[in-house]
Length: 107
Image 1 (tube, one colour):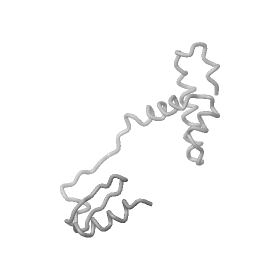
Image 2: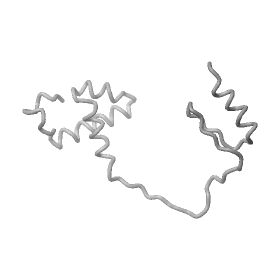
Image 3: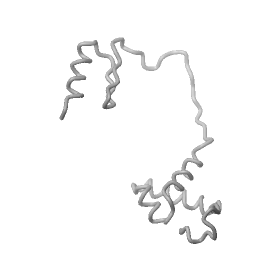
Image 4: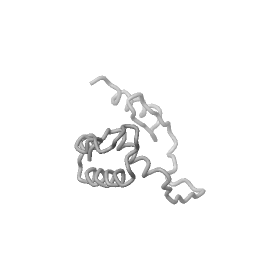
């Protein structure tokens, strides 16, 4: 697949080209290949493939069941989010602080 097949750069790719590219990318991703490598191999801009993949996903809704009861009740204690992305939950304050010191200590 090549961008050279289009006459003008601002002309959109035909739908058949998009569908074929998305199918090939999905197959490559399922085989463990990188999106960047696939885009390079197909000679398409990475952002174009990302946009096509996003377009395909938009509009698809999943059924959701909402109940009145909590599925994972909280155990009390504090909930702490650290600057490095750790989440500490369910410990008392002293335990959370001790764990925080270990997690956030310089390496």
